Image (tube, rainbow, N blue to C red; front, side, top):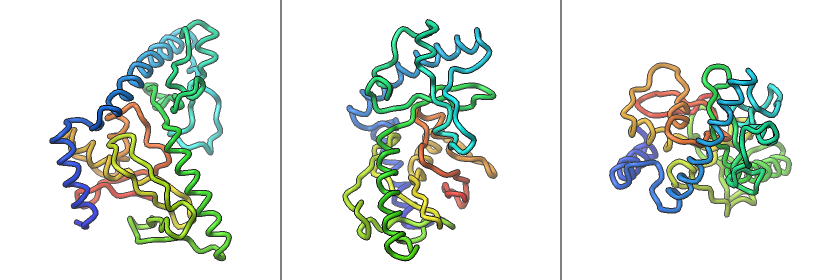
Length: 238
């Protein structure tokens, strides 16, 4: 087991023992309660709408849009048709920091939240990587190999060295990583490991481990890639 995973595992155990949840600080707990209430209310409205209309109140998106960004809730439709009295203040449409969206749309539609701050931070790093790539004949600001096909980003080489992003799940600082083409992602291995340990789960086969983050929180793992269980740890998969 690598040093990175050993350290991550120790931190996970400390966090679980000290807090017993995925949100260790008071501010995160307050935000959790705020979004939890909003998600419950929107879920109820979506369920009622689907029961009556036989379709979901979503904004249409193309096939190229990733799963965790795709089916945003159409609040105007819900409000105009009387399924919700007002758009939650936590929603981007009302100045909040999250987009509400629906996952598992074909089986069991669930309302979740896409954190806009995470999206913006990843986009900022992506633009910096793109500029570096253009200025250096296609080479990448690469650090060490994090997983097969994925590299850490040497932020000291680009104009994003001061970018700091904390996980919406654990509050820990996240690692940015990129694929061989320079596409930037968030590394959710620590959060996935924490969720698996908290649930005392036993991952199997090739299942996408991001499902554990879906079950552990109202947030979706935005800007991510699939993870599989290998050598007793989550590993990003191409």
